[in-house]
Image (tube, rainbow over the protein chains, first blue to last red):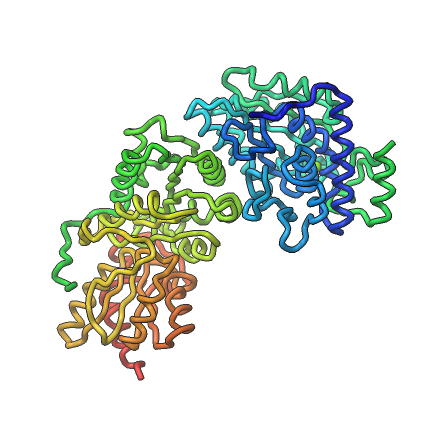
Length: 277
Length: 321
Ligand SMILES: [Mg+2]
């Protein structure tokens, strides 16, 4: 049985706020980790886990579940916070992030037995290929599962992503959705300065994908984009979600220096009080 | 077991054994699927793809993606077999193997074709000589290196039905002696005693096992009894067979169509030095690339023949205390 999804926008906003707070708290506790991309992806993950995907936190291995493949492994903090918020494990465990013996590895590791984690990942550019393989397998067996993969925008500089992009279109995988967290930044700065990705929409269209764009922080825009996926009978879908690194904490929004940084305990208090407004 | 039980029934490429074994395993188990990276006929996967077109996935010349897709298929309960030349399947995709396959501990069979200099005229870029070294350091990985076509057929079936987690299976291109009996079976992780003897032990893998057998026959004429051990599973290595050989023979020669560094020779010496140190001589590539030429002449040029093994046996015997 799938667990019941949230219908209203206020409910989703509330979940996203709780997830962002968890991210800040767990990062302040671990003392290292990636805050920027965790905040930019928070609304995408909230939409997926509370409004889009069929899944059951009480039965993580339910065969009928939709699969979420996190390719951008370093935003593990927001992924863990989302899983905990959905009920896959107790929220207190988020404070074990990156600690010795923890199920919450710095980058997701399946061998540590975290419920709801489908794939160990952390080396960029590999997740989409895995999602393609899963989607092909489901197609072979006429299963109705859907497959959602999240990539960062900087990650698209990995050539293997484009091998997977070609394969997904070639095999007509309309059960596959790629979401790109288009926050425009990577560790060294602006993606267009490090290695330009634009025109990104045209690239995906040229690769044969049904290409959608949305505001990655507006639930109506996100939901409407997800509703448009899978309609094309024979094409995979990609959603380019325009986001802001560090979203939700005004003082760090759009600042690439927060890509791979954790807040101090004092900063965390400040950030959390801002999130509560 | 004596040498006489091993007769060459005719030369046959190990890749043919790979193709036959894959077809057989595919007939027996519907979960088996195969991935193609363009050179399917050249690596023996065409038998499977024409028998089961619905279970064959063509992904083109994109090995990194092939490896990730294999991981995804395995996560959904399939048993994927992805074969291409070993230089690509083991080396171009090493990071995908490490993270998507090994860290996730997924049951995927990677076929490494075109192993060794016996690939011949294609030259250095296509002769896999470093694949064992890289594959055997990956946690969770099993590394298989069967000695002839018959054994390769059994090895694919064992890789699919017997092994757990990721498996790297290495095989060659050139038609080489097909001499083992299908009745011998294949137990992954178990060394095979091909010739009795306790003067010196030859521990060989792949095509070099036949060469080792020829060397043992020659040595016998000189009154030297060499033990020949076939290592079809490089990882996990049958440590007790290696330690017993060290203790009972007192000298070892390893033989492989691969770099000595990191290969079977290294694996054997890790075990021997840690348990029962004896002199070891190494037959294999000595930190060099291969080149174009007729397979057997290349084997000769790079010191990979029974004659080289014979000489190394004498050298090892001399070093025996
Ligand atoms: Mg980015």
